[in-house]
Figure 1 (cartoon, helix red, strand yellow):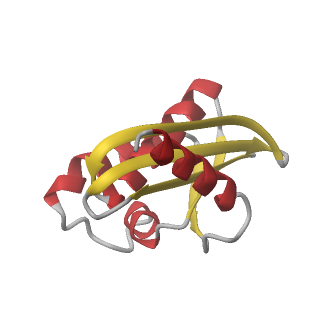
Figure 2 (figure 1 turned 90 degrees about the horizontal axis):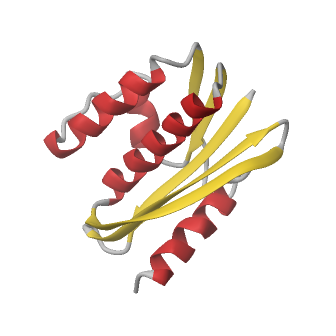
Length: 133
């Protein structure tokens, strides 16, 4: 099973934003990536991290993926528990749903920031933001 940890954020909302993705297999990190996104909202950054993780999972040929984030909003929208009301996020949501549909078994789990490898993704995210300030 692939576990994908993602974090997105902005300094200010909107403000300078970035995301980070950490992918593990059997507890071993096999991929890390972060990207600066310019001036955007935190939810935009969270969705861009989700999309980056899903895209990489497809590149790796992953068939069983657990996606772990600390964004309850994004996770609950992906699980269909919350509606997507923000028009600026709708296209990102639709892109993420389309990518997720190409993975045979994908689950979405929300956790607190201090749990599991979210701190690693958070550190990558903040390092990316620091490089661009």
